[in-house]
Length: 288
Image (cartoon, rainbow, N blue to C red; front, side, top):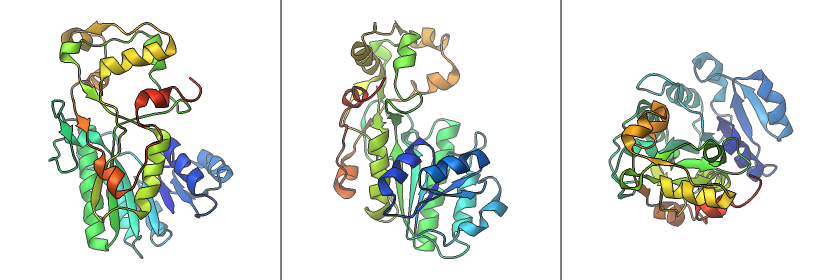
């Protein structure tokens, strides 16, 4: 198996597969070679921004997990397009799993969203993810590869850098008042890694999956509950107008979209059983 974008989640996937599966990982940083080898992974040096460094990837692996983010600018994800071109140079893989984002749905005004909903990305980064989805699905149809797209919400874990709301609560970062609040969605990093592994071998070809737990909480209520878990006071609540004066445009963008995710396809077709069915159970496990 080849992992492209072997960060925290990729390493969790590798730990779940080795030594039964030979795992390779693409990295553009020489400093990552030693840590990858220590994890039992074969490192490959290459850069998704430079097609010339990717030519040997074709036929190296029968299964590919693509978790690398797009570049920070532009409407298209050229990195994914470079990877797809490289994988087609020789024998295409049997399966490819792409880690996308639920941001491709845009604002759904709090309704329950299934994978059949039309994509309406509202931010530049979500537009790049939607473009990448289109590229990998086209690749799958053209190359005969079974592609599964995982639409991923907020990833959390106590042992993941920045993986809990503790720092925000300690800084007293405000949230929206209840009248203007938005639904937020979550998946524990370990559950996401399991979904990635299952999708490499399960699920229909050219299929998308919402990879989310069963939590249905608005952001402010989530932060209130986390504060109680950590023994901290709840965060202050501001109007949207006042909050915009306190937070960056990037932070505000996460409060401009509201949706709840239907995860039944993940459970039925990938036969995925969540270890952490709700975010508060997951936050309560492990170091804080």
